Amino acid sequence: MSPKIADEEVRDALIEAAARLLAREGPKALTTRRLAAQVSTSTMALYTHFGSMEGLRRAVRTECFARLTGYFDSVPVTRDPVADLAALGWAYCFNAVANPQLYRAVFLEPPTDEEDVAVGRAAVQQPIDTVARCIQAGRFDPADPESLATQTWAAAHGMITGLLAHLLTLDEMTKHFSAMGRNLFVGFGDDPQKAQRSIKRAQRRMSDRAPAT
Image (cartoon, rainbow, N blue to C red; front, side, top):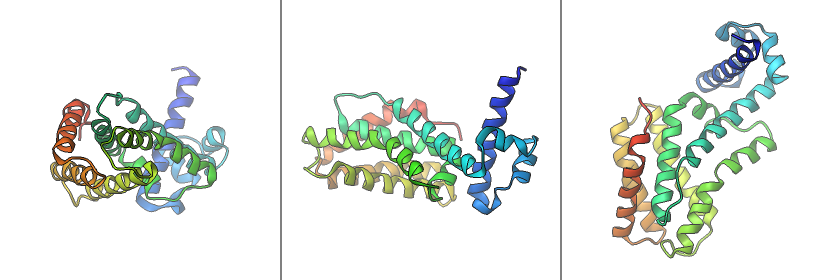
């Protein structure tokens, strides 16, 4: 194994270990000794790859949002913007299921600074743009796209939190997730039957992308 590959693996392992500690115990659990022990590397590795503990925390958030963006980017744009929005909701859910520690570490912990805030906002721009398309297509009533996208995100986040806390099974969350989406879309102004058709269309598109649990 070349030094370059080894270094990349150590960096990724440190990010995953930091996410686990943040998710389970909070920021105070992040110490160089604990991280080095979990990754079987030297304490200097953290400074080599990230410069500081703050740099590592920023890298955790950047990695989380990069993976989320990857899931969002895998959703193609179609002529049905409501189906696209529902598909983005499933992509958000799939990212959380596939990366639970990163999800907990980022979405249940505050950002370190304004740069972190900007990274997070950039990652959720695609759902905002898709809501705007729903409004332009006449499916949703005129409104602030960012507000509607925020409401959709908050509802999805609640479902995912229930799943990660084992208050909901995956089957239960799937059932409630679809019903929640229909209620939100109708509340935003969509026709109930059109909303249901779009949600089913999104489910068919995303059914083979669900991560293994």
